[in-house]
Image 1: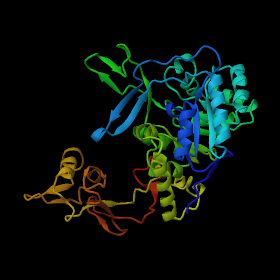
Image 2: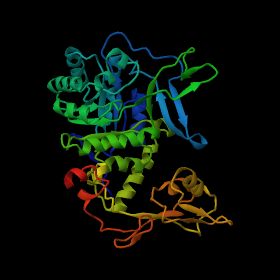
Image 3: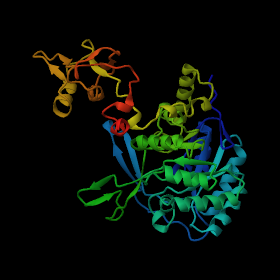
Image 4: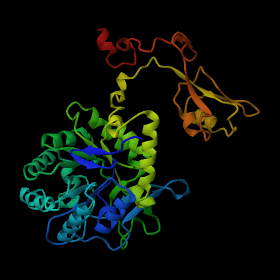
Length: 435
């Protein structure tokens, strides 16, 4: 069977599934239940400095976006970092790590952007026996208004500075958690590497308002008639997370920097996609909050079975496999031509493909009086919309035209797979190259 054990920046765990720093990792009781259920590691909910306690709202903390049949697509969270005393958290971290030495125990930290504050808390975490720290530069609400969280994560110079402080004052691996609330994720990742970070984790939550109560005219969740922006997570943010992970993995300036992938991991397939795009492990929150801790058992079994089927002996064999195939648009092969094909035996004659193509796309599907739908090759640009809206899996597929065939849309011979892109009229640099 496939080996799911991982070693991420020297931290070993029995599988690549870690619980992210969030409500599920706020105290000893939860983390013990998580480890008993099979999680490979946890990132303990963010600790702050000793002093006046953090005060959370005593009311709704989550706003939810639902899909069909009330499936949770995303959760907006307005909860702050831990509101439990620092000494209590540290005592519990030490106890759990003692009893589960084979599991990864990473502690999330967020203190003011002052060197002395970081120097003060790092030795306290070290004393617990924790395996590493994660610097929370991502939280977009509450703490960011106090000059922490994403307020730091949006300024690469601050990321580099704080990371360097931590590397100079701890023996533990330092993971930098990045905010997605930024234009180009490569710059904070480069700053983390420049500061000596052992790894980055991403994405943290996306700044959001998920809904408005139209009776009270107030954003939700609503606290005494007022609402605020929060951090959005769950399956809805996965596409953004995958892109940002891939951008860091393929950036020459951060190539080789270990990545912990976060953002909507709900199934083994989600995890495999993050791994393929360069992550060394994944962190999970919303899936655990939605389905409970035992969801990890399905994730681990599914990933193991898939790896066996594909012949991947280890998680490391999967990590980064798709990165060489992530490219910029101008490097795509414009000589690759496909056309839609409809399997009449599978078609249920719902007409969704026709409506979508006729109204919003390229008028490339014909409908006969008896509702038989066929593709008009001369108009089909292979946009894939018909497949996306078809309710029957594999009813519509794309068929590639072989080199030498006539493309009915253009009347031109389909060129070899790798034609001369430098002279192609769609290449922005073609004119300059011709000159």
